[in-house]
Every structure is written in C-alpha cells, then in structure tokens.
Image (cartoon, rainbow, N blue to C red; front, top):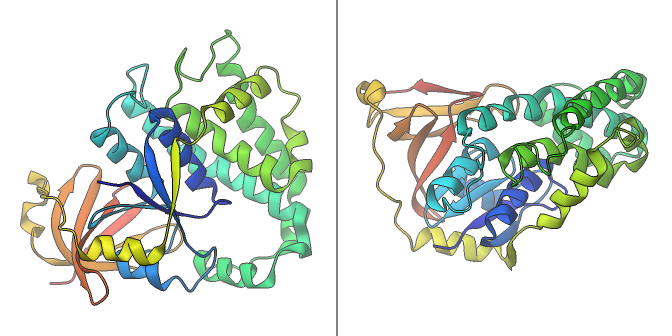
Amino acid sequence: MTILLHQYDSSPFSEKVRVCLGIKQLAWTAVDQPVIMPKPDLLALTGAYRRIPVMQIGADIYCDSVLIVPELERRYPTPSLFPAGNPGLDQALAQWTDRSFFQAAVGVIFGGLGDKVDPAFRADREKLSGAPFNPEAMAAAVPYMAAQLRSHAALISEQLADGRAFVAGDRPGLADANAFYNLWFVRSFHAPAAEAFLDLPFLSPWYDRVVAIGHGDRRIGSREDALETARTSTPAPVSVDPADRAMAGKDVTVSATDYGRDPVAGRLVGSSPHHWSIAREDDRVGSVVVHLPRLGFALTTTS
C-alpha cells in the first residue's frame, strides 16, 4: 500500500524520515499538515497526537519518527537502514539526536531569530511544550547553545575522521539520518548559526553526500484523500507481547512524556517491547489502529 507521510517541509523530524525514504529509494506521498494547530484532519487519524511526522499505511497510523523508521525497515528491508548490522545501537542514537542535540539546534535557531518568530507559532509551541516561549531568554542562551551544537557536531566529525563515507561505513543508513537532520535544520532556517560547526573537518563533504541521497520518489497527496484511504482500508493484524496480555483489549490512553502530551485513547490490541497499538473509532475515518512508541511515552489503563 502507499506510504502517506503527514509532514511539512520545515519539520526536522520529517527530514529524518525523508532521508530514510531516500536511502531506500521508496515511492511515497507527502500529505502536508499545518505547522500549528488546529489540525483536524490529522487528529481524525491519530485521535489526539498532534506532532509531526505521522506515517499512514491504509488504516494503520504510525506516530513519531522513532517508530516510523523501524516500520519502514520491517516492510521494506532492502536496502537496510542498518548497513553495519547495528540496529539497536543505530536506533538508540535517536535518544541523543532527538533530545540534547535537537535542543541545541532549537536554541541557536530561535535564539538567533528573536522577536522575528511569528507570535502564532510562539503561542502554539507554548501549548505544545507547556512552557513559556521566551525569545529574550533564548537569545541570552545562544552562546551556550552554539557551544553545545558544536560539540554535538564534532562527534560526527570524529566518527568520519577515518575517511569513511557515512557514519556507519561505506553505505548510508539511519545513523546518517539521525546525525544529519539537526544540522540541516540549522543550515536551512538560520544559516548564521551554522558557523558553530561549518569549520569542523570531514563534516561538510559528508553533509553533501547525505543531501545527494535525496528523498526517494516523492509525490503530493491531499488530506482528504488520506482520510478516504483510512476510511476504505482495514488495519493489519497485530499481536500482543506476552508481557502485556493482561492489558489486551482494555481501554487505555497513551501520551508522550516530554511535550505534546495529549492522550490517545482506545483499546490495546497490539504491542511489542518497542510499541503499543491502539484501536480507535472516528466518525470521519472509521476504524483505525494508532501505533505509538514506548520510549518517551506512557500507557495508562482506563478500564
């Protein structure tokens, strides 16, 4: 079935997934969602999850790049996103790149932009994070954040110092997508901040090699068509991890533990050590299954 990626072009986590789609040279359809709320078409699919990206395949909805990547690998194993045979380690890298590395990138971008940030965007991100969006405080923190960004980027440079073409060796993989997208975010949306890392050896040639991978065969789709696809499809069969059998079929909520904590409610119908699968109904799309990662998310039983 067609891969539908609910995204927007400036989303750094969408860029991570787009690079993975490029590595696999997959055909996929971009379904652009608003950058800020409201997102009624997305929430019809997810229930409450508002973060981007979300991958849809039929009536199966995969939330968060941490879960989207292994699902792509499961469905389309060749070429692998783990060319050096390190799937656990390469996926664990996201706990670095999606957190401290990402926060450094955010700090230098928005601290540098200051009061040029759209007030509507600021208000939306305050609701998303549950914390004030304070341009003055961000501006004051730029020197610290720039130093952090340089240190993160230097780790990539050191990994490439033996002359390898990509982070894990001669072939690109998830490790490159993880390492790349924060630098792409900075270079794309606040170029002066890239001075923090542009002089590091080995980094720029590698960056250009990742850019050259492209994003696969990208097509354009509509939100209306995505909803129709869900409405006319049936979720794929799933199984419950033995450790979760006592909760199978129960009403639950799953929510992120860092930001964007709106809970997704439904019945637990599937799980593994890495994810939960929640069945839910919606007037606009019918029966769907929403898949959410365990890392960074919490499940609560409500029945």
